[in-house]
Image 1: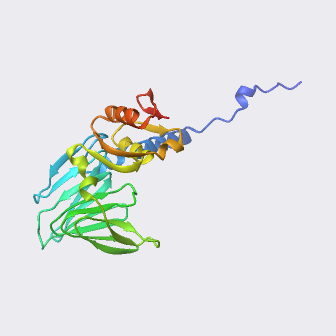
Image 2: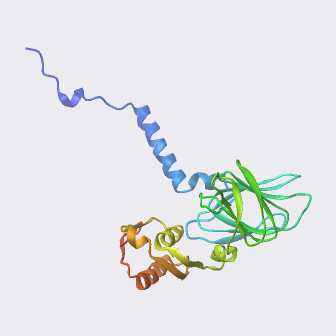
Image 3: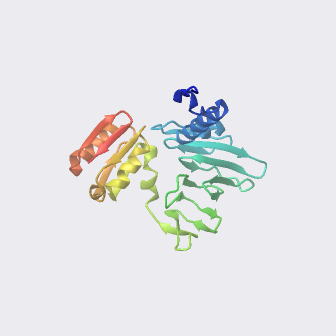
Length: 246
């Protein structure tokens, strides 16, 4: 009689090369999600929950919000900044000969001397102007923003100007997140940017409740406690990286 094959020996084994490729792919995905790739490319960056200011070579000031990375691309004709991730506010020193240009997430914001923000995470209003004027361009067109305006989109996706409270939008520079009747789901999403791990809302109906007030992004635990007390919700910290809201 023939020898019965051992099933343990008949199972195909993964090639070592495939295992290495899979491991490198997983590391790459995690590195991208955690911002490690962007930080390696950056000239300056902030950690999750960190807010910091820096002065560029031309004297312009950049305020970096949480989990933000920028790369500098100065040339004789342009002061270039690439916003790799996150959000930044730019206080630009005027120089008509060398315009200040910020690029990120398919957006180009060009200014000569002004204060404006750019956010590179796909929000509806990625650019806003506090002072001066900024020309915002995308692949579908461009719009000139005045102080107190943000760049939004029309039905065709083209950039258009919309009046907004830009000072409120950049209040994080002073350690304040200001909300005026926003849905709780949006409030939690914004607060989650300053906190490692995830805030998971388990009830969509609760997420529609509206919140008005000021929260401190530097202490997300205290901010969640305020929401719990004022919104009638329950906050459960399952692990340091997972918080349930219901």
